[in-house]
Length: 77
Image 1: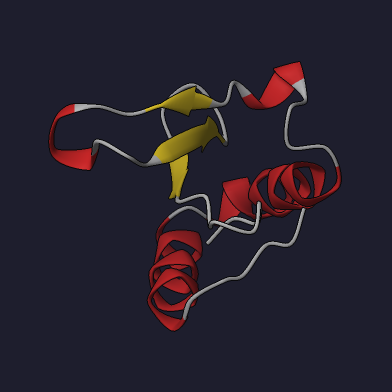
Image 2: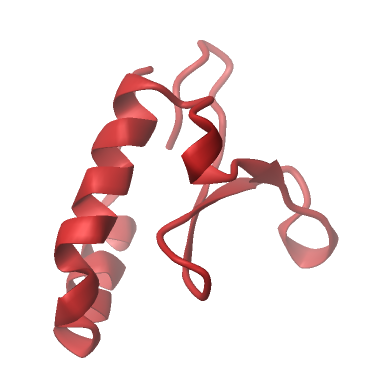
């Protein structure tokens, strides 16, 4: 899958990693796995609803998620 990391995501991700350096390796591995195999069961992909309706998320761990949007060409943003 073609994954595009926006400037706002990269900024928020760097800030997140400063606050949670113990999750850096896990988060990067999950992003790579998502890029290679978006439907991997270990990611726990799921649609969001409510305020984030139309977006999707996958797990970094039990507490943290990465939210993304699917693009019309089948990629993710």
